[in-house]
Image (cartoon, rainbow, N blue to C red; front, top):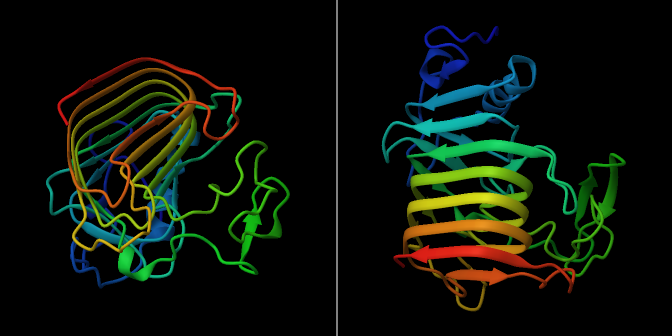
Length: 258
């Protein structure tokens, strides 16, 4: 299937390429990971991309490149994480804890359902994952010390809702997240980040499972959080500069309305 920006330049309407058969809260329907990822990858060849999500789709893990905006038209539109994905719904394409490699990423509107009742919180001993640097299978069990990129340890393969390492100019506005399995967001090595009007909706609280909200690891600078509301099973907002590497800092933080 050829993907073209048929309306505004660099803009793709998801409904031009597929029909919708997923309920954003109940799930169901057809997995559209391959299609959605192929659209997101157009940001590389086009230089920028705006994806308009005008329905609800079921997906596995998605990776988002620099100069990309995902805009959902309303709260019934968005993404539902496929059962047993056991990985973040959305990550940046070029994660790095030392160098910022992605920039200008925005998530505007809609609902991101992480489907916590059908995901593992973290890998168990013996579970395998792909080392994306070497393209080899590795032991991804909890506490595993080798990672796809140097620096982070047991966090790397948790089922976060979002995971972004090494991003500048990152905006999340007017979204609802539903049922995080582990943290709603894990973010490290970032600069100029805005979260505004974010509802963290946790319908299914699993006792003692670290269903945290927004978690920011250092290094980081210039973070603004406005009107963040909802529920978490543990930390709702964590500003944790050196939690992972014991040396990083975070500065210039404004939190207005929780």
